[in-house]
View 1 (tube, helix red, strand yellow):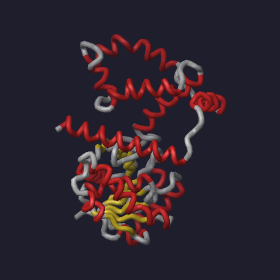
View 2 (view 1 turned 180 degrees about the horizontal axis):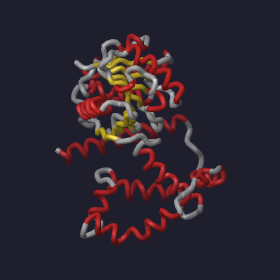
View 3 (view 1 turned 30 degrees about the vertical axis):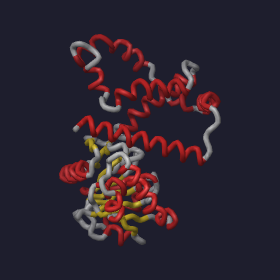
View 4 (view 1 turned 180 degrees about the vertical axis):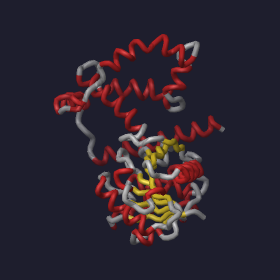
Length: 309
């Protein structure tokens, strides 16, 4: 049976544990924070049980039994096939972690980082085993949103990327290959473009933040849950993508000529958005809203699986 070591047992690490445990892998967790590590198995079992309610995990008890806790990094990575790193989002921290991983993990093990924006060349260049290192960027929460962005450094071997893609597909994720390094990879760059325009529209008083959210949740987001932007525009003109571009790109060219700039994130815009949004929820309310989000994502995932099969 394949084994994955998961470094960091916070939100992302626990979600990765759910992904691999339900996929039939042995999972070893480790974390530098003892209390977080001790709480992880219980929370992972709760996540598996929640998925089982939607028919997404046939045997949550069996999956949970494949999860174990390791007291040290060396113990966690011994004999593994894959390491999924979820450490601090700084170049310095990742350099130190990957230096240890390259020394301790089996030579054939893939070393993958969950980093959201840092390209692998910034923390793997000096490693003897740098050809087996890459970014495998998930979306929070990975056990419910299956996309995984695979992006190697210039020295990452094609065989490493191919093996990683096969692994993530086998555990029911949806890997994509990012062919060259770019900060933020694909998803966060797309999200960043949308978020900048959202900040501009709300900051300029064009729309309230609540109504902007409705525009996505009850508009674009409904299509985007099963169609990407290219598949969408193919259906929005009789002649497909070429016809759409001929008909509608005049507006988009004008928009692209005056994109939302970095000033949309200035303190004044942020203050206007917060004033319109209202009081931020407390910790308990955030936990409740997160649980509600996860239930709805699980239901959507189950629906998509049913429709695809």
